[in-house]
Amino acid sequence: MTVRKGNKLTISIQEHMAIDVCPGPIRPIRQISAYFPRLSPTAEPVSPNPASSLALSPGVGASGGKSGGLLSPLQAGARGGGGTLSAASSIETSVDICSSDSDESTALGTLEFELRYERATSSLHCTIIRAKGLKPMDFNGLADPYVKLHLLPGACKANKLKTKTVRNSLNPVWNETLTYIGITEEDMLRKTLRLSVCDEDKLTHNEFIGESRVALRRVKPDQTKRFYTCLEHPPPFPSPTAMGAALRGISCYLREWENEQLTSLEERGRLLLSLQFLSPPAEGEAEGRRGGLYVRVLRCAHLAAMDVNGFSDPYVKIYLKPDVKKKSKHKTAVIKKTLNPEFNEEFFYEISLSELVHKTLEVTVWDYDLGRSNDFIGGVCLSCHVQGDALRHWMDCLRNKGQRVERWHILTNELPQTTCHD
Image: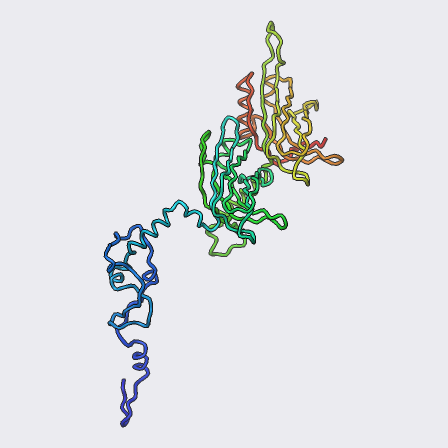
């Protein structure tokens, strides 16, 4: 309210603030998206009329006066609720999105590879083809990239495969095939392949560039599938005990992941066994092979490294329990410095089918150490009282008399009750 005191005109503080702050009608505050429009799939068709296009220009106030040099949408765009892009900018944006070279502009780069699972040989072939647009890691603006493969969940050192290193390149070409042996159909349903691209440094530690993960259930047996993936940073997995109240919603998922990682430590490699049961020859028949159980230890794959050199000196021991007379023990030869030994040794147990039903075949893999106790790598038990692949293998042997039944088995780090270190 204006107060007159003599010839002096005074103005109240309320009127003074209203004059300074609101010199004209109040204009609505525009959103920042009105100044930086984006091409939307649901946007209206682009009009060829330049007058209706959206551009950045000095704004004009609602009262008709120019604002203080601020950038604002043109009136035509403002009436349209944000406006549309001009024809030239629309074409330029669409070319950038649909360009075949757009993957080179990703932050970490892209990786091209092929996967093929052969059911007959239980092998997974991973062909690393090339990478494009990798992140520079060296002072010269280049990198020395290579690719590491891991099967998750699983022991990292036991199933790690690695390509060669390509020097001074951000677009390396490998065309290298790495093979995992002993991959069962059950593994293809529950395993995930992690492909990590790293930069090799001779003087310092190698640097991580990015990774890509593929669920193996996406690969059909005996069919080659090609992948084009963008490299990503590894997902963080904080401990649920260290989370606040706001992150408790994902604690169940993290707990499940931690349990899976603990379970994965139990896998210590793979073992390929062949079982055959022959009935004793009847009277009057020509004598051939003796009747009983034939156990052939063929090979192991991706064993856990037990020595400081990154290898093991593995050998296999088998028992048929219960072993009252302590005569069921057999042992293969020791294969030096390898994680993928081939044994091809066969052992025989003279036993009837009625007795074999109540027996348990215990197969263990050990690392030979001279002068001290041997290290236990892993083992598996086959009988009518187990579950999974071991039970199926045992029952197939008993049902299919006279036929060789081969199957890969996962070695676990559960030490048998009877531990012999010889």
